[in-house]
Length: 311
Image (cartoon, rainbow, N blue to C red; front, side):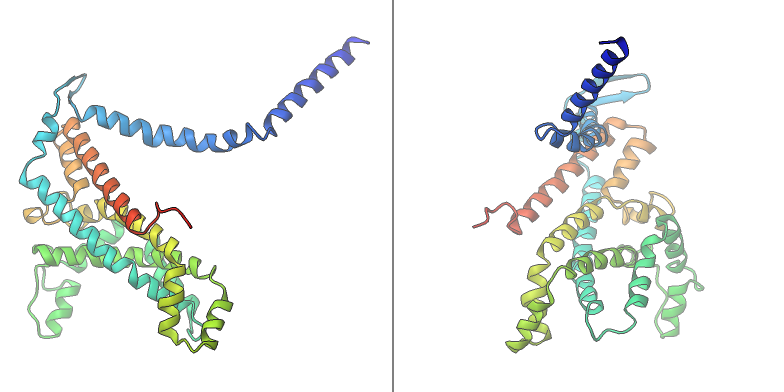
């Protein structure tokens, strides 16, 4: 056998071994999940472990030293408790608004009798494409304290007194909720509409034959069959509520709202870690935030019965 033939045989043998490796049923699953494992390790696991270590350190430029639980003891103050309270109230109210209302809107837009469906879908989704910075700036001007601001002009035209929208705790919270609903209502509605497409029309037709009205079909068919979508929307809404920061920052033009009425947990993290250059304390805030969202999500999934064995 000549040398070129030997080389060709070796190349063929090499390519065959690579192909058999790639198409191996034992190795292929690991190859497919490898990108996720790498991205999870680099962008989640490593930052979390680093933040956990930093939360026990005093970090100054060029050096760091372990100080035990001092950073966590420093979190025991009224300002941090207020940040937790603000984030929790905001998250709870957004869950009350951004779960049922988009569900009902999706059911309406999925109905046969609904007209101008595409127009309403586009109208409700467009706010999600708007930058948070732009939306926050517009809302700050609309809910300003001046007589000529949009909301004060509107309520004075109705005979009411002008309000300090961003100077009062509950009015400021209401403004944040309006901004959240305006931006995220369309996104949650799309999730529910995608879930509605998977419900067979025969189920509704069978219910109609049995005499079920629209309310019965909604409560006994639509809501139960959309449970997986509801759990998903619930979970991301919890995360979104506790992670809220940019909206508050833009609405009050900074991280210093009157009496900290707009201070959130992420805002407190930003204030400690960035503005006060105390990275160890900022990392401790991040770990506490992670623990709170993890516990709430676990309880929520348990209440939905996600950990129960299917019979």
